[in-house]
Length: 90
Image (cartoon, rainbow, N blue to C red; front, side, top):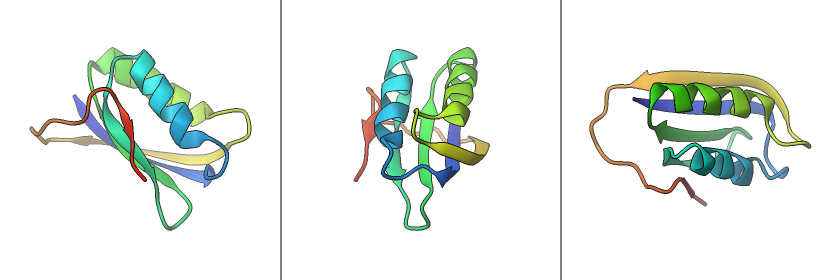
């Protein structure tokens, strides 16, 4: 299963990308994460449904200094490969 996510709120400058990558790697997910110009953090992840559900819960919580306002989460019907292990894009 593959998803796209976007996290809104106070999520840049607080280690959110590092947090997301660490959590995804711990769950064995492939994918990437990056900061967006609008202040959000976006990415894609791929893996088993149970691992993605756990990842979603962790993204909604965020790291200690983040304030997640909204988490957009969309399933994708894409058959290309994602980076594994999970990467941080600049």
